[in-house]
Amino acid sequence: MSLAQVPIELLQEILTYALEGNSSPANVLSVNRQFLNLGRPLLHAHLCFRSINQLIRFARGTEALACSPRSLSITLAGGMADFEVFNHLAAALQRCKRSMRARNKQQSQSLEETPSEQTEGPVQVPLDMLSLRLHSHTNNPYLGYIYEALSLANPKTFIWMGPDPEHHFSTAVRRLLRVQARHAHTGWVQQIVPSATYHLIRALSTWTAIEHITLTNLSFPSDELGVNTPFSRDAPLLPALPSLRTLYVGQATLMPPSAVASMLALPEHAALLSVRLVDTYRHSIWGPRIRRRDIEQAAVALAHLSEDARAQLVERVRLVVSCEKKTERIMGGDNGDARGVLD
Image (cartoon, rainbow, N blue to C red; front, side, top):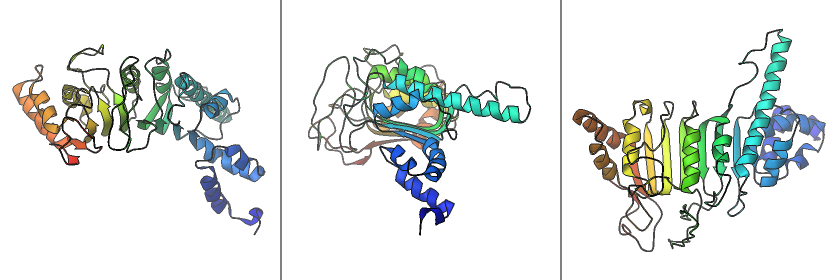
């Protein structure tokens, strides 16, 4: 059977499989015009970049997209992160905005409507998912692009993970130090650094549709010693996000339990149903992991709440928060604990 005889639905499935994970999708789309016409909407609906050059080429494109993107992902192998990766991401999202604006304008003209702010296109690009697997660097002079880029999107699901395999424990370090610590199968190196996390949290505050957040391999810009941060000690871990339903934080350092308690105390987080903290640390990885009772104690200590409010917050912590041990260490503060839930 020739390709001309293959049903459209089956051909779309074949193209979806051929394009998924393909580092050179143009090779597939250039087979013939039918592949191009069917493949472009599949490619543009789920934008996937595996190199800086791919991202730059897309950002510099001028042709309108075949459809509005539903997801966007950037996956860069360890050590490949360009200092200006978020500048390139911002340019890519700007291209998406231009394409959406042009499409909305065409639709309004075909309906003989007067262009409005809504038909001209959204301020942010709505996405079902925005996923990043890449490093950040303490000596990157362009970390401000993190906010500029991420605030151009409005995802329902956001994922930022380090590029290392799951069994590697890699986390951020401060300043320009590069510390090697040995875990069960590997060392750890800097990934999402505190200054990058700061700009990320600023961007999160602009998202009105966010429902699910996954953050791993990061160091928060606050700690109980107050040495790293413009944040106050009892500042919430995340800003008010009324639509947020689940939060997963893994392999994180410098995360005060009080920040989690303060976040759950915000009435704007009433929809938050699950907070999973996996291999998270109050200070460094050499100390004990955060346990749920640490967050309960932090809730009791929140001075701005009444006694009844603190009691209700403790019950909410017990209902919503799960602290877990996943990655083993050769040595360290709580190495004798079994893997699993840490109460």
